[in-house]
Length: 372
Length: 43
Image 1 (cartoon, chains in turn red, purple):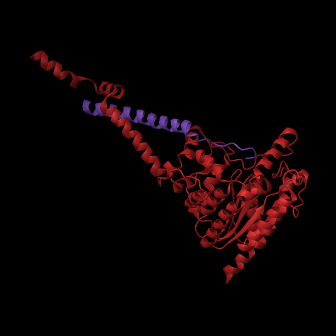
Image 2: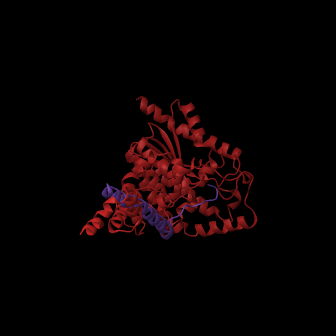
Image 3: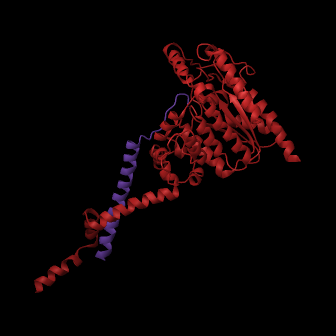
């Protein structure tokens, strides 16, 4: 009997640390349930904490997967614009590598505009590599309520030539982490089936987020990368096989130009209407610089004339502006790296000067309207 | 005292394993969903 009592008392004499160690290392049902609960709580915390609003207030560098992660940078910039309100007058450039290669740092443009207009005029450079028309619609949707100023949309024949199959691919690996009903609507109209949406940012954009999961480690390992805006090394011009491959790729893209142009412009038309409904906006369709030697081998003069006439008509109908600054900026073959990217800072400066001059003229009436 | 230690131990185990399971699911999702960060020439 006394032996029995001794055995029963034994566990209570076990040192506290030993009990802790044992329960921390031995499998048990409570530990299993606790593990599942902690996992669930972590997912729920992410769903609650990771939202466009919270991301917009984080340093954008903590979203960068690498120092040239333009897609994260543009996503973050869109979020900031939505939640911080860009101010009474601003310029947003919705473009791609062509606009980025052709223009100087947006802060330089902002400085010049601010000086000329006598008031701060922020310039937002929202660039997505090979941007699609639906992505332009999504970015425009994110500009925020009450955006006033100029929205520049980069135009290039190949951009209008893309069809729905390209959109399907963009769901497998989404490029922008932007929640946009407008994007979803445009995709639906393009006849592409949308993935299911839960309405929770973390779950709807998990592909964008998990692809950048390692960026989180910068919180522990040290300073995050600094974003490199532009990466084409000066002096490098495509030649030989690389040039031939590019020509072949462009020719293949343009094969569907006439097939998809109308539907692309319909998306653009709806985008312009939405922008107008939200604020006082001047829309500029900016034709990207084009390597002069490709007129003929890639771009037939008929296609270019037709493209130009089509966009001019679109601009007239939508009270927008169609700008082609190539001749005004005196761009010649030597200024190009490839079909549309300028390669020298000097050519970029020339192009930026012309663009800034045009933007100033377009923004000046806004000041007069404000005074009234 | 030992009851507290016992549940504390379970709490420690659950937290560590829960965090590991969470990260494993994230990694698995990243590997199987095709999610990736694009590298573009010129950007």
